[in-house]
Amino acid sequence: MDYQLSIPAVLRRTETLFGHKTVVSRRPDRTIVRHTYRDILERVKRLGTALRQLGVRPGDRVATLAWASHQHLEAYYAIPSIGAVLHTLNLRLHHDDLTYIVNDAGDRVLIVDESLLELWDRVRPHVNVEHVIVTSRTSIVGPSVGPSVGPIVGPIVGPSFSSGASAVPGASAVSGASDASAVPGAAGNPLIDYEQLLAASDPAGFVEWEGDEHQAAAMCYTSGTTGRPKGVLYSHRAIVLHSLAQGLRDSLALAEDDTVLPIVPMFHVNAWGLPFTCAMFGSNQVFAGPFMDAKSVLELLASERVTLTGGVPTVWLGVLQELEKNPGAYDLGRLRAIVVGGSAAPPALIRAFKERYGIDFVHAWGMTEMSPLGTLGILPASLRNAPIEEQIRYRSKQGTPLPFVEIRARAEHGIVPWDGQTMGELEVRGPWVASQYYNVPGADERFTGDGWFKTGDIVTIEQSGCIELADRSKDLVKSGGEWISSVALETALMGHPAVAEAAVIAVPHPKWDERPLAVVVLKAEQVATPEELLAFLAPNFAKWWLPDAIEFAFEIPRTSVGKFKKSALREQFRDRYQTS
Ligand code: ADP
Image 1 (cartoon, rainbow, N blue to C red):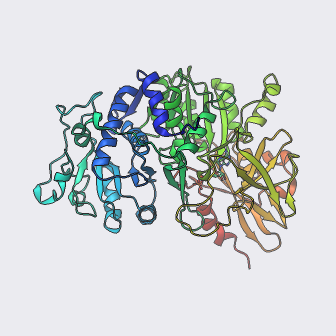
Image 2: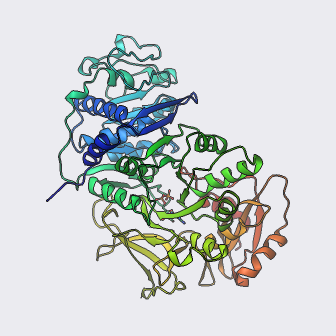
Image 3: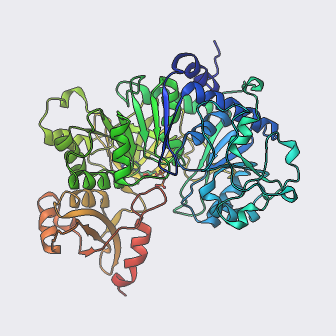
């Protein structure tokens, strides 16, 4: 049969098989709210119907500017279910970047957290978003919202702001976080209260979209570290196949008995696809709201008996420090795996969680252009009884490709052998890999003539197909024509007992062009000298790989998704190491 792999098909399954499973959300006032999938899907139908009534049509982009919450999840499900495109905006971006992105995407409607209205105020005058729907922190969020359950909203803005409100059943203006936010949206429409909108909408009027699986369900923008951010569309088919692959036993093995807490923000590549995968397999979901600090994360992991969680390494470095400060304070007995990705996880981190808490890290490699998952470091059968050293070494690599993701690496002279030694730029292809950027006319240099995507990541590939990422090409240290992996050096440095964080960058050098510089943050009350740290590295690296200098810092700047921001470090240290 020519069956369409679509988000509505996934949600039909969730509704019929997993209606009793739960979605737990921490609200901005730190209280916990619980829903069943049945409740959530009823609200999804209300939202879908309301969006249609607002004029949203298949293919239209509906943006979200929101923390992790059940309302955000509802948007994840409702928007593609009416054939529109879910566009998650990164709330940590500068308002100029957001303005560029909203205009480039042509977003028609926005769903925004009340706490982010101040940010939105700076974007609003420069974009053409017709309707702005506000999830208010004071709204009553009951398990079943009927028209009789009235939300408590902030002061209602008077009729002078309500031009066009009659077009939207239940819509009324709400005041936002600042005075300025009480003014209408760009198209002159009032702000709409999310709960009122849902309360006034009839779930029975919901009409599921039945379109082509190749149509876009969602979109995200790349970080734009080089040039402007670029839009990437994810088709229904791509998301469904990606979820199916995430569920496999040699993958994340997601199942009905799992409870999943994504620490990765919901604006970072669809929270790595987890909300769709959980819906497919009936896993419970937990959302942390705006509280991503180590203590809050640990509290939720323990209280909700989470079985699988995921986030970038910096999150887990913080969590480890909190665990060490308060041993025994958190019961993580149910946690079977931590998915770590976005940048390389240091072996010392993987080892600490395994040895001290019995928790396995699953190293995931991927990117915005890949929905995002490409490879996973699942321990092969041959290593299950191997010494812990060997296991950690394997888990520190980025692993093997998921089904249908094909990989190859290319150096100057062509495709490199899978020998675990020769470095090359990783190229990928597969059903959830982008084939072009949104709104970028003409051929983009990142796509090869024969249908592969150039990742910009420099890797070695072992005979087994396991990749090890040496660097992003822009972060490689090119010393005297040879490449030095900043990732290898910094992940090794983070194995020193006094080191909390380390990042290695290239600095200019008169003879060698570039040399490595390590920027190190020490743990509280720990001391170490540069000489000690260099001596710690020396046994495992060629002499010419060792950093020329080690600088100590109080913190390493982070990108909007929590990775080390090496571009900022390069800027900071360039002048000091500039030699003419
Ligand atoms: P950003 O550009 O904001 O980092 P992405 O999330 O798309 O946006 O980043 C993808 C990049 O992150 C990859 O190209 C790779 O360089 C890096 N990356 C992702 N996962 C890993 C990993 N497990 N180990 C090392 N690097 C990783």
